[in-house]
Length: 325
Image (tube, rainbow, N blue to C red; front, side):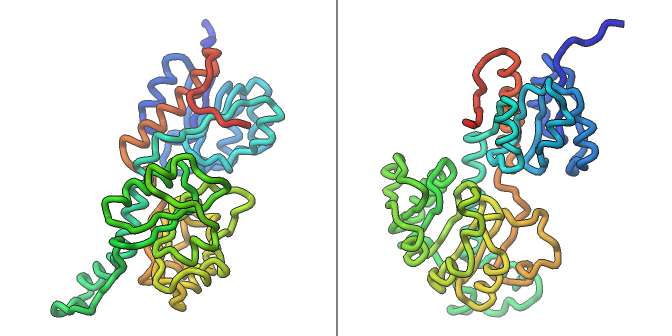
């Protein structure tokens, strides 16, 4: 019997079919075809002898995984923008190119950021509870008052692809100022009339503060007690970037004590957030299960781009989206 000479790729989760269909034309595809996260021992077994790895943000791709795969592994491509789950230094040492999926989820994540911002600022969680538990009485002119965007100052930490898309969404709501902080001034700031300011200035002057930056060793726990103490007591904090940006104990204390008015989170640390987390006891904290890119269009595009990154390596072409490592 003839042996299939096509290269082998292992896919670590059930993903939208668009990417798998592309790969099947040129690769022997094996897959952890379930919706739950692949166990570490199954990951080590699945990568053995493969030429390419199609992984997710939830998979820890470290030296052990690379060793288990073997020296023939030519590329690792993740269906995510974040890549902190991959040992980049080890990949660089082994000359393994890494692909990721920026841009295709930008609009979906910006939409979700706006959804969280509006839901938190207008106290929708509390309002829905009032309807459900019967505490909704007669119309009251001073009941369930929230914080509107009209005339507000919005601070965006990280005016990259997603931060800029969020800023564009904000403009029709009549915000008076958009300020942002980051490692450097953005060349795109004029598109949204945004002002580059220090992180401390942003904290002190913003009515709404949005975490839209990537997670690095330098900004781990950036939003801590010191940061929350500098915010206005009426401030709304929203994070759709990475859970590691936030010290969650400090956030709980800030919300519980009234240091800030409310928070909306699409990302936590850990994920999933334990059901006994004190954050879930707060009426002024809305937590979502990391669904920023969860539209059919965005996830399908992410799956396709991951596949195209892999295919490009074996066609001796430049990846559509390769990490600069």
